[in-house]
Length: 200
Image (cartoon, rainbow, N blue to C red; front, side, top):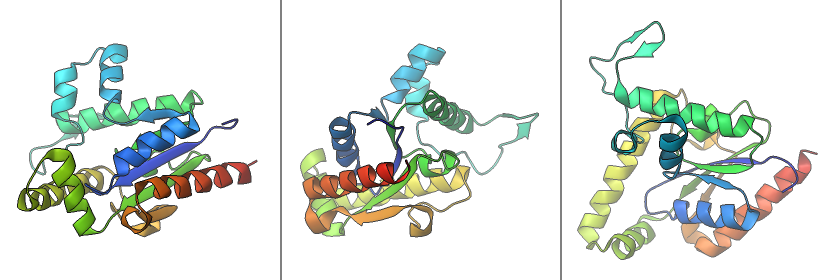
């Protein structure tokens, strides 16, 4: 793409959001920032990869957390800030990119090229997808969906003022179950290209 495009993609667990992000990044030939950024941060910034992975997308504990002179005693909060700063750094370098999760639609809200997307899905489809991908039975898949979505919601709402999954804070919310993952990718790609062209 000729101009910078920044896509912040949030997703419900089991909605296929990560697959969609990977496909969009490949088809648009842009950078993908998801859990892979932990390896990059570890190499570029010298942080422990083990610690980064342990506290990735984790909300800070509600009690005992203090900030003194801009420094927090919460390792969860510090790891989140490291990732937020890294994402902004990549945006400031002029990269076109897709950021998966990590409060991207909020921390990048001041960038004119931002397009924010939320991927949801029908529960039956999400359960079937997790059963297949994670080799789980139906009950365990449903529990995993609830557990991951609660964690994502707590993480997001802990660090920013907006609410995870609230359609008012995204440019586009789409249910990947209605047309399937491949057609959802095509719809989003068309939307992204049209938005990009409209900014110039």
